Amino acid sequence: MSRSYVDAVRLAGVASAVPDRVATADEDATVFGGVEMAKIAKSTGIRSRRIAPDGICTSDLCLAAAERLLGDLAWDRDSIDTLIFVSQTPDYFLPSTSCSLHGRLGLSNQCAAFDVNLGCSGYAYGVWLASHLVASGASRRALLLAGDTGARNVNPLDRSARPLFGDAGAATAFERQPSAERMFFRLGTDGSGQNHLIVPAGGYRMRPSRQTAQSHPDADGNVRSLDQLYMNGAEIFLFTLAEVPGLVRGTLEDAAWAMDDVDAFVFHQANRFMLTHLAKSMKVPLEKLTLALEEFGNTSSASIPLAITARLAERFASGPAKVLLAGYGVGFSWAAAAITFDRPVVSEIVVVDTARLLERLASSESHLPECLRTPANEPVG
Amino acid sequence: MHANAPVLRKAEFLNKLEAILELDEAALTGEEELAGLPSWDSLTLMGFIAMVDETFGARFSGKQIMACKTVDDLMNLLGDRVAA
Image (cartoon, rainbow over all chains, first blue to last red):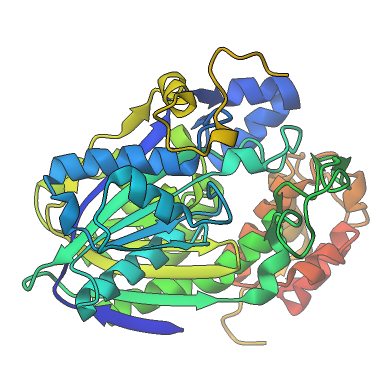
């Protein structure tokens, strides 16, 4: 287990953004049947999700969150010397989406920027990275962008996955502050779990082709192609039970926090059944378990910051709060952080007007390469 | 077997499974094939994993669970913890 702490780092603010289009459990019911959807919604706790239309990417959502956050923080763009983009739904495999975002944000050339390919554990890894870079002096001000458009990876006829995923992007700011409380981190990996949460084709192990795009039903009647997400819920749950209680307990021990000292437990928002079972088995009081997935679904690396902006703004404004973050899943990869939030800026959630954004992306002022710009009123050939 | 390991009678185990599967009490005998039970699916499997964790503090590998074909197979996973 990777264990570490940092001093003198302040998490200065957090913001998140979601697309304006809402998909509801009722809509899913038209595909999977009302009784079936009611069962799924009861277990997952997800009633609605936000969906980005084709042509809108994670980067667009993260950009909206970043613009809001930088405005609320009144940070000079030139003062940012590190940009980290955490996502498994990047704009491109080449160049890094963080470079593209650097340009769109108008940051200075003296800024380091890179992508991190992690999902459920991605935000906690990003916080670990950004904090250590600031603590070491390698960075003065770091901007962490995290999110996914996971709904896009799922086959619409895949009952095991379609009702779960939503889209979101988040931005978090870090800077040096000598008086900041120590932050504690634990991270781990188990690569033997690689096949239980996977998009098999599209990378270099198997390039995308007409064959990989073909959908087939599996033994449970769920339909998907090799280009789409496969998830083994049982294996993921078993992994969660095997690793997360120890991860949380260990991080609390490192921080010398008793269960009662913690103001909020913000876990990756995968599925309410798993979350409440975990909380009960760890004796986490349910009123301290932050939940936002009912409205937004599983937004992968954005789920923790989205939950913070949706549920904890008021609590954070009232004074320092001890928060235990934990992200775990795809990889298998996991990370936890014990952080004392000291009245950070918590921006209002940005709801992105996707129709207007699509117009802007198609226009001649767009940052997109010409080959990807579809003029708004040109007929699709 | 440790002195404080919880032990269930078979009927109690079956009742817990019946609750997860939303079946009437005493509906199961143990001989039922899982594939033949209409409510046995990925969601009830999660419920079973949670029940076993909560009741016995026990956990099994995905392979062990997937190898179970009948209700009795599920019960036999628990070994001594369920008195037949």
